Length: 97
Image (cartoon, rainbow, N blue to C red):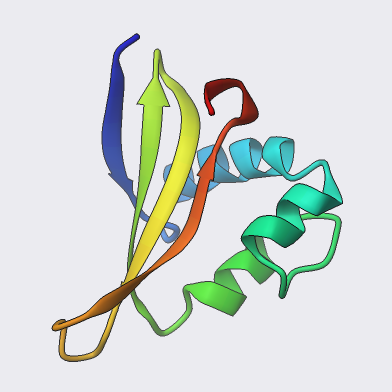
């Protein structure tokens, strides 16, 4: 198994399309969505996901890729002074946990 990390951007249309597909698949179960983002309601909506967590933030997001498939996502939101940050939305596909 060869897993690599790739930085992604929600503003990039191709990245956004790929993420939406993976996230919709992962969050078919409302409990999984609530675990990762309790401010969102089922069914999953990428635009709301972005608006709640990523608009006007210093966020960097990363995916874990295995054989061209997204198997995980994670984000870091940095403080305005970039001296600290918080980890946000860590999620690994059920088959890879």
